[in-house]
Image 1 (tube, rainbow, N blue to C red):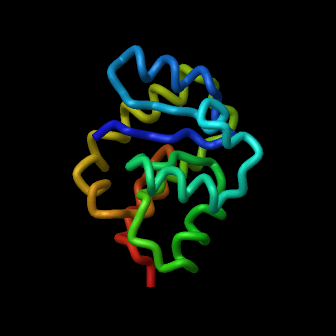
Image 2 (cartoon, rainbow, N blue to C red):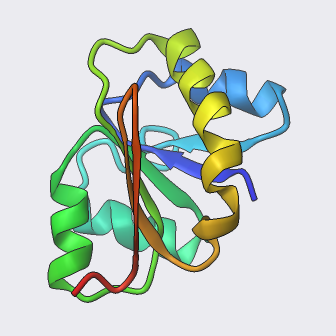
Length: 122
């Protein structure tokens, strides 16, 4: 499953590059969610069966407080990613997390580590 929703802080061109490589990638701007609250973005990702990819730590807090079972959220702890670098990061991380995404997880990825927590977060 490579069906993702890229949050506002991520470069919109990354969605276009990923689609060209066979991913079902959508940026929040393309979904009409550029001014949406985090919870609206999460609701859209859940309803559309997408993994939410973000730089915003609040997304994990929202799914924890809501005791949500979905959507899976991938929090990237990188700054200054341009579209190409973001695509490279996703292609590197995805094989390591893909199996767990269907179960509903909150993932934090750094340059050196991955932390995967099953949903709901307790």
